Amino acid sequence: MSRKTLTQYLVEQQRNNNAIEAEVRLLVEVVSRACKAISHAVSKGALGGVLGSLESENVQGEVQKKLDVMSNEILLEANEWGGHLAGMASEEMETIHHIPNRYPKGEYLLLFDPLDGSSNIDVNVSIGTIFSVLKAPADISGREVTEKDFLQPGSRQVVAGYAVYGPQTMLVLTIGNGVMGFTLDRELGSWVLTHENMRVPEDTKEFSINMSNMRHWAPPMRQYIEDCLAGTTGPLEKDYNMRWIASMVADVHRIMTRGGIFMYPWDARDPKKPGKLRLMYEANPMSFIIEQAGGMATDSVNRIMDIQPTELHQRVGVVLGSKNEVARVKDYCAGSK
Ligand code: AHG
Ligand code: MN
Ligand code: MN
Ligand code: MN
Image (cartoon, rainbow, N blue to C red; front, side, top):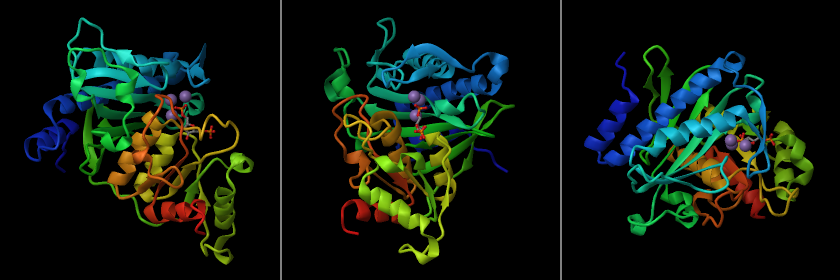
């Protein structure tokens, strides 16, 4: 079996297809190396003293786990010095991270959820890292980057990816040219292309939602789930299965592998937060990946990647996955069903 590595794939994309610039290639290499380091820390568990929580809360109002903070630091350190970034933003930091003056600055912006699925760390269930790359505005050279520079719709993403730390560690990546899945070869320390051109099946009978929030959802969302639960004798005439891992990375990875629909919809708990998930480092990168694999990603009605962000830590309702099922939910929520 010929083994193509991530490096080879990226060099080919740069050389043959002109699909990425050298600077972006380096950026992806650096992020993927950081994910290797995070994977290593995760796999040590109690032996490495990485489990448990800290005293601190992040800007999202969540108690930080040790691994949330460690992963954030690994990503910052790895990406600061390479010269390809103008700045970074993360779920775990209140505001943007400037590149220290001792290093050269580049044209790209990196956004990340350093450790996704924090509630699963201590119970040894799959977790991950999600990242998104944007190009800084053209006038960036010679001035400091600002939060406003990051507020670009997801359709402007240059790269998006996630690493999933599960039974295998995988990196799933799009540079806007389909979606490729790489598995970490732990002996060699390299990412090997194992899942070429990943595609999300258009139809599904499997949904993914935290059912405990049902009483807070909008009526059309409740109706859709009730119709799913009604089975073959209900209006959807299908027997649905349900999965909820509570790590978005792991739930999305399942959908990338065998289809499905993932929902963390708008709910009425907090009027200031239209949903739980964060637009810039969860919803946008996952939407880019899902769309590149032939799926669909909406906030229940509108395309996520068309949303013009107004805040770095903005939240959004998320309905993504198999195209025909996401379109069905859109019909319910747009009032046409
Ligand atoms: P994070 O660990 O980065 O804060 O994200 C957690 C998110 C997401 O991964 C998952 O889909 C969702 O929160 C789970 O939420 P519930 O615990 O409400 O089910
Ligand atoms: Mn969190
Ligand atoms: Mn997350
Ligand atoms: Mn997180």
